[in-house]
Image (cartoon, rainbow, N blue to C red; front, side, top):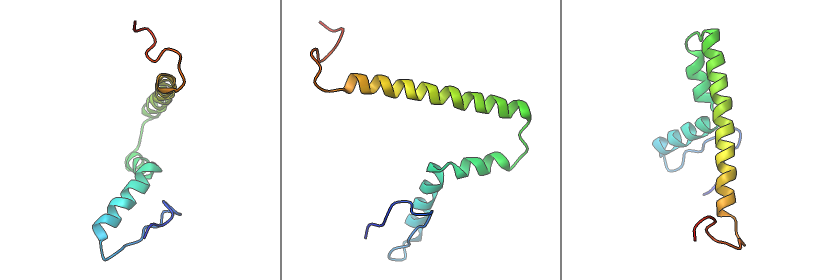
Length: 87
């Protein structure tokens, strides 16, 4: 039985398969970055470390956005020249 994915962090245990439910729960928490937040708050994070982490996350997000845009540009359909720059 398929249920609505990630509905309020609820995981159904089917056929007494607890290991699969734990894996699914870990995936849910990983996608919402709750595990990362928990790991960060286990110990004190100095202010300079917070600044470095936040700057790194911003740079990583900008890089990923730029790369996704470039990949979508290359993968677009209805191009006049299928492989631009190659002749």
